[in-house]
Amino acid sequence: MSVQLALDVGGTKLAAGVVEHGRVTRPVRVPTPSGHPGVWDACARLLVQVADGRRVDAVAIASAGPVDTTAGTVAPINIPEWADGFAITDAAGGLFRGAHVQLVGDGAATALGEHRHGAGRGTRDLLAVVVSTGVGAGLVLGGRPVFGRTGNAGHLGHVVVHGEDSPCTCGGRGCLETVASGPASVRWARERGWPGETGIDLARDDGDLATAALARAGTALGEAFASAAALLDVDLVVVGGGFSAAGPRLWQPMREAARLHARLSFTRPLRIVPAELGGDASLAGAAVLATGQPLP
Image (cartoon, rainbow, N blue to C red; front, side, top):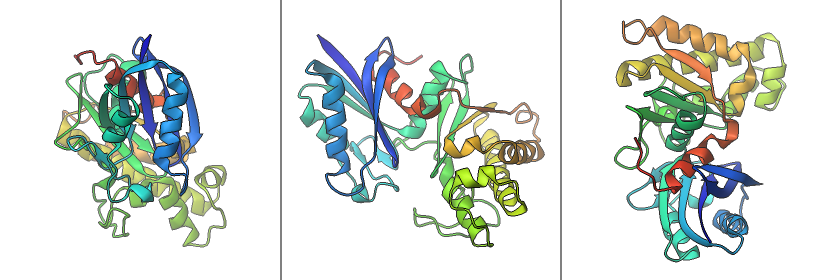
């Protein structure tokens, strides 16, 4: 018996599972290690575990980016040991000889997963955004995922926010990720005397500073979504990720900012909705690719 596998590589967790009927069954998740024995060693153990001795026909890998789908390499900003680029496609191919290996950015995989199985079912055009330790995103246009030249299309977290100049880990300044991610919001609040430590603390604190930090993040996200709608002609933004669960004090400014700036006739119908697949969206998208079936 042969199987197809899906692997999701993120800065905080790794997940893998066997693909059945286009979906992952019983995924296995482990924390992403820092340092030895290394991230790929952990990925390999996870893949071997879920394969369970069966022949592997295909492996689809959704990875935090940037990715290079042509070269088969990844250099996630939040995985320092891969900062210079890791040949993940070759590594997976060496693990399962003869298997077809496909690499996709986790943003594109998330968009595909939500489009097929989540909040984007029945739509043809959407932007999927993950607001967590960073801000990732991916696109489905005309019913098909858009990967771009290198696999990084839709990387909304690194568009520049008006009036912001904070240095970003990518090397730029004022990126959306430096304003709207969980850690960035915590940092902004702490610099102003807030005593908490995490995004969860922010969400639970109804004080003025925590509320201001969430409003700042939500406003930046809403402005970015309005800009994306004008550029891409999408009418749906699906928002997930751990920090997106911060509640109305994030979502209300997000939607208000989008309404304020999405004023063209074709952008006014823009809807912003919560993701349905949670942390499994990227893995769900990889599962669709692992089957090798033509996309619509």
